[in-house]
Length: 608
Image 1 (cartoon, rainbow, N blue to C red):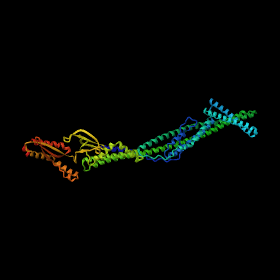
Image 2 (cartoon, rainbow, N blue to C red; image 1 turned 90 degrees about the horizontal axis):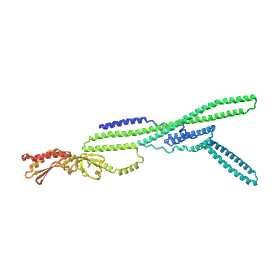
Image 3 (cartoon, helix red, strand yellow; image 1 turned 45 degrees about the horizontal axis):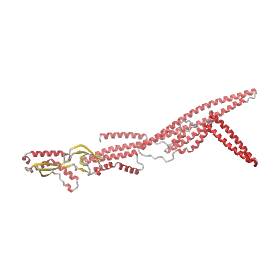
Image 4 (tube, rainbow, N blue to C red; image 1 turned 180 degrees about the vertical axis):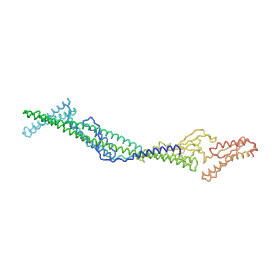
C-alpha cells in the first residue's frame, strides 16, 4: 500500500471512529408518551381577552406529524380552549365588578340608549294595551284599534333599532365592556367547534432514506422545536403574570376582609347610640348597612376572580408541562434522525475504506499475474476505474437514497444522459474496445486520424499519444502530446504498428559500387546483421508462436532476409531484420556503422 493510501485509510478509520461514537450516543429510544396536561399558550395581547393560547395551539397542531404528537396537539387544543373560556368568564366578572369610567362620547351614547329604551318600553306597553282593547272592543271599533296596533308595533321596531344602534355605539365607545365581552365570547364559542380539526388526520409521513433527506428532516424538527420553545416561554410568562395578579388580588381581599369587621362594628355602635338617644334617625344606619353589604358582595366577587386565577394558573402549568414533553419528544426524534444519519455516514466511510483496501489488494494481485506488462497495466486501470464507479454509485445511493419511482427515474435519466453525454458514452464504450484483444496497450506505436505516436495513456474517455516523426525516419518523439477521445475505436479506425512484444521489421539499405564483386560484401553485411539480431530473432519467433493459433502463421520466421537489386551507379543491398520498437533506432545506428566500416575496409579483410 502506498503512503497516500495509508494516510487516507487512517483518516477514514478516524472518521469511522467518531461516527460510531455519535451513533452510540444517539442510540436512546424514543420516550413513551405519558398522559399529560394542556398545551398551548401565547403572550399577552392588547384585546379585551387574550386568545393567543388557542391561536398558538392551532398553529402548532398543524406541525404534528406522528401519532404521539397528534395526541399532544389534541390535548393542547382542548386545554387552550378551556383556558380562553375561563379568561372570558373572568373578564366579564371583572368588567361588572369594576366598570370603566365613561368618556364624554360614551355618556352621550348611554343617554341615547336610555332614551331609546324608554321609548321602546312605552311603545311595548301601548301595544300591549291595544292588544287587550282589540280583544274586548266591539266589531265597529276593531278596525281603528287594529290600525293603532300596527302603528304601535312599527314604532316598537323603530325604537328597537334605535336601542341596538345606541348599544353598538356605546360598545365602540368603550361604555359597555360587558356586552362587548359577551359578543366576543359568543364568537369564540362558535369558532371553537372546529378547533380539533386543526390536527392533521391523514397517515404519517413515510420515512425517506438518504443523508440529504435526513438533513431536511432534522432541520424541520429543529424549526418545530424552536416554535415549541417559544410557546413554552410564552406559557411560563403568562403563568408568572397570572401569579402576580393572583397575589395582588389575594392581598387586596385580605385587606378588605379586615375592613369589613370594622365597618360592622361602626354600624353596630351607631345603632346603639341612636337607640339611647331615642331619635328615629334611621338614614345613617341604612347607609352603613348598605355599604357593608356592598363591601361583602365585592369580596365575594373578588373571591370568584381569585378562583378563576387559580384555575388558569393550573392550566398554564399543565400547558408548560405539555410543551416540555413535546419538546423532549421532538428532541428524541432529532436524535433518531442523527442516529440514522450517522449510520449512513458510517456506511459511506465503510465503502471508501473497503474500496481503498480492495484497490490496494487488486494492485498486489495483478502484479503477481504472469502477463505482459501492458496487459497488466490495462487490467489494473480497468479494475481501478470500475471500483471507483461502483463506489461512487453506492455512495450516491446512500447520500440521496433510492428514487421513489426507480423505473421511471432510470428511464428518464438514461434518455437524458444518452442525449447530453453521447460523445462521452461512445468514448467510454470505445475504452472497453481498446482494452480488448485487438485494442492498444501502453507503449504501442499507432496511427490515429493521421497522427502517429507512442501510446502513453489510455483513460476511460481519452487516449494520449506521444507524437513521433515519419515511420521511415528515426521515429524520435516530437515532444507533443496528442489527446483523442476514445470514440475513434467505435466510429473510426486506427493503425497499430506494434505486434506482441512490439517486434518491428526494419531495413538496412547499402549501395555497393559497380565494378567490384558484391558477394563477399553481401555475406559480410548479412553476417553482421545475424550477429546483432540473434537473440531478438529467437525471442520474436517464440512470442509469435505463443500469440497465434493459426498454423500458417505459426511457422513465421524472424530470421534476417537479404535482397539485391541493381541501381544507378552500383548494386543496392537491403537486409530486413526484426527488432524491438524501442531498440530500433539504436540497432539501426549500430548496423549502419558496421556497414560503413565494411565498405571502408580492404577486400582481404572483408573476405576473411
